[in-house]
Length: 523
Image 1 (spheres, rainbow, N blue to C red):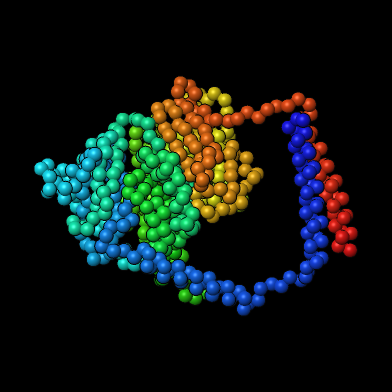
Image 2 (cartoon, rainbow, N blue to C red):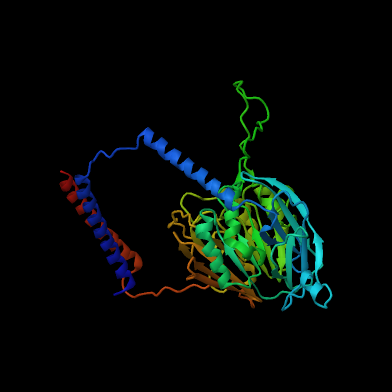
């Protein structure tokens, strides 16, 4: 039987099942009370109080679990300089700790780098101590000090160990490797929104991704790392879920809309007087999470006012660009054009939160697309990695809303757009969006990307590690990009459209018959 015939039969059977389900529902409705009671005001108020009680209990738990101490926690690697010769690290303590420093040494096969060990062994001290900076943060739960150190003058392509503390109380020793100063193979992990139930559900995703790619050079987070921008307990869950992975692999985060919030207790007023003489409204502008800059040490090479949210990093022949899709979009369009145009790297990866092409229903970002996509079309990045829509969608190589197919010469370069989600919150997939070559709903995913010379290999894996989607890009010779696509078999006989029409007509007839039966059943 041809595939087209199967399509028609499938549509016909689906219609029969729909009628059967409707008849069954009608019969059940007759048995039940047709006037189903709506919840009363008392019931609504009771549910509201129960939710408030649960939230208060959660907050008390967070206060116990995530209270800062004099021992460093929330240790995380990022970059604010060249990955070849620098490495930034940030951590948190309580406010009794006012001194911050990091210690770094070349990695070796034993503990000889440790100053404590060197005192009991006849070897010279090998550890360098670097003073750090301290920043106070009062969150919704705690007062804490956030500390940061940037290790500089490092050797490219070299393994180091480090720890952070105040000179007496230290973290454990972590290890990292600096980037090569030449284009070399690299790999990285990409996550869409973690956002909700981070400790309970996202933890297995990041740990699974690490187990698949333990030597990743970095991790991209495409926004909405947590749900409430200034909820310190949620940031505590995010750091706990990743754990020591954050201290071993540098993070490259970009902010989502949930990293923005109206400042608590803001009394800022709108400028000018209202015409009706009423009191001016409060300023409801959303601002970046108060936790963002204290806990991440990131580049400040972006437009003014977007420090540590819009930036770029060059690493081993790849330019990574983080854009902040929440604000100042026009300024970033002007800023990113020369960053893309004057790029000495073979590969370019752009990440931001709100998708250029949406995967979910009713969430189109037309203004953003009109601003940024023309820039991408003029100077195409290879990948655009996004979040926000809590579904999965991946395009082919695109330019100007068109999917490029076949052998593509150098003047036909385009971009692969990806939207993904790593947390448990899910939206409805827009099945009518025809830009997607691969798509998924109700699925937590992580992405593993490897770049080696002219080749880029991409994989999307589900929360349990199963391969869901993959493709290859290739830049050898004239073939600039080559997305893996499985050709669909073409069957002889009637055309696909004819078979679909047959199936639809048959389905409509069955539905009409079902409607008549429903009327009789309701009589």
